[in-house]
Figure 1 (cartoon, chains in turn cyan, purple):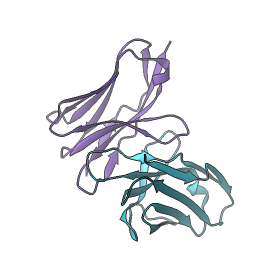
Figure 2 (spheres, rainbow over the protein chains, first blue to last red):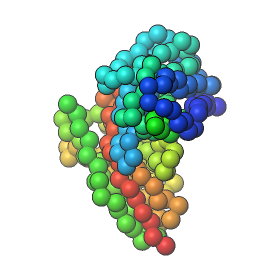
Figure 3 (tube, each protein chain N blue to C red):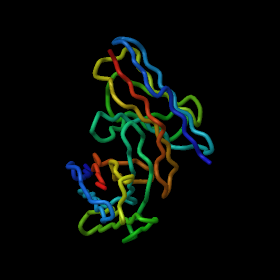
Length: 112
Length: 112
């Protein structure tokens, strides 16, 4: 069966520090991969999505970037975090067709 | 651009009754419409998907309807239980790249 791993679950980082959140998927090949952000009590904001290795589409211009070095690995990065980057970050995968999207546990990022 | 509207106010339902949540969209009908459940501090969990050419879909106590004329989907939980309390999100799938457009979600509270 397919599983998705996202870590860490919580993270506290100082302003100006770098960020690296990692997400891996098991049990499927060539998935679509997504990074979302969700503010408290709000909906999901799509940050990046990828349909294949090295193929990244950005939805929101900001100080974040994403990379997909392997088929089932998706990384969210920042060189310098801002206070406004504090949020709940979610990784998800899907396959083309009539199936749903499946989410990781999420990372609660607090920038102090 | 496509927009999705879900009732932003919490829905309070007495245990045992049927809960009905609404998802309205503008513009073009999606290829698929999906419903997810999200608990606090967790990622959304896929529940049901309904295709453009389907009127109704059922899964245990869940039922989803899709009316492309009204541009609306209804999500029903019959014989509701306190454990059904959560935020429910709808999402539209518009094209073959499997891009998801998300509603902000409706918080459902089932009172014992």
